[in-house]
Image 1 (cartoon, helix red, strand yellow):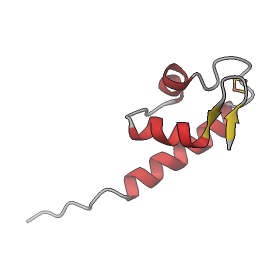
Image 2 (spheres, rainbow, N blue to C red; image 1 turned 45 degrees about the vertical axis):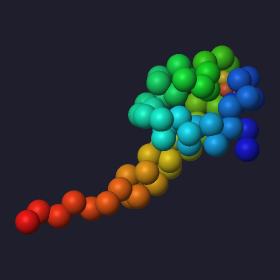
Image 3 (cartoon, rainbow, N blue to C red; image 1 turned 90 degrees about the vertical axis):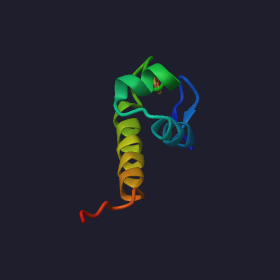
Length: 66
Ligand code: FES
């Protein structure tokens, strides 16, 4: 689904950006253009990015100490 109409950025684009190492909204704007024009998408883009970050961190293996 489109998150940013101004720059044709989808939720998949945001998830891919997170997989590529994006960790904040400034980096997301730099990488995808999301939120860099009218800014109407900022809140939803942040929500999608944070969800992707949570999913990514929960997919990491849990390290155990010896
Ligand atoms: S809808 Fe994203 S910058 Fe306008």
